[in-house]
Length: 72
Ligand SMILES: [Zn+2]
Image 1 (spheres, rainbow, N blue to C red):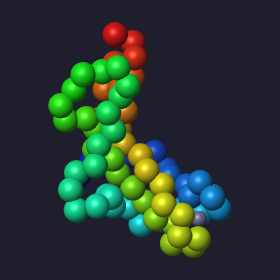
Image 2 (cartoon, rainbow, N blue to C red; image 1 turned 45 degrees about the horizontal axis):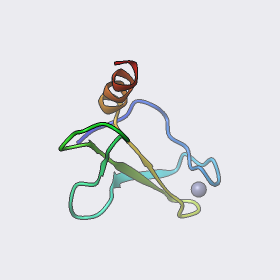
Image 3 (spheres, rainbow, N blue to C red; image 1 turned 135 degrees about the vertical axis):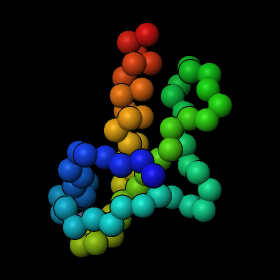
């Protein structure tokens, strides 16, 4: 499972009382516009345990790869 070292906060209430996980039973992915790729990047998620807001993100290594795509 991908992880992130960045401290996440709830977008709605700024709480850091979060439960991390993923979305759905199958792998959900982010596919960059105008890039041909088969697999995409796994979408991770958290739910805020204070207000119930759900947020999405990709892992650190995927962010690094996405930055390289834009600089290529
Ligand atoms: Zn919240």
